[in-house]
Length: 179
Image 1: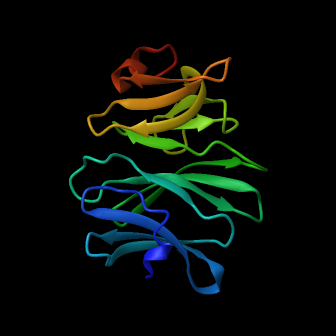
Image 2: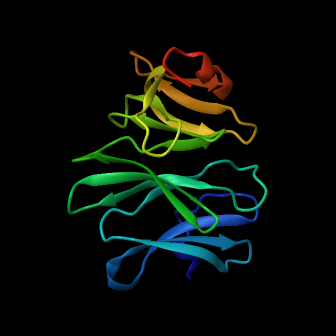
Image 3: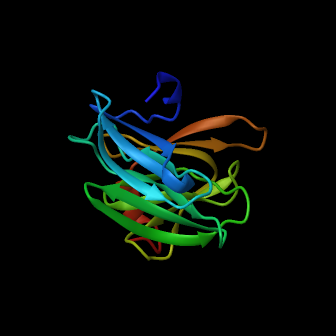
């Protein structure tokens, strides 16, 4: 692979992640080791490339990957996690146009931004197929999982300034309606 093609990597200790076109224009998501050898890969349907990130950067081994892939024929996107040799579908939803993409896996719960890319709300899924529960934070533009289990997110305020918030996932259990 040419060094010029390495613009979509997501770093994790000893591994990196990239997408490429496979045969018949399918999107191939590849996990490579530090020697640039492909370790694992998945193939997604033709359309927008999957939007993915590592669930944490401090995990031993390659860590889980969380993200969205799209079914272009039905304007549906699928929220998924990919751990060693196992892909789990967490949620399917309509996405006609530009939808928020950031997602993170923290303490066995999947958090994602629901709504538009520049002003969605943070929601939590306790398990695959569950209905999302609000985490009580709106105006979210970015989401990242910290290796120690905290969640860092960027919140857009009314005057278009960004503020960083640090949330402890244990606090989600104390919110009404959340388990």
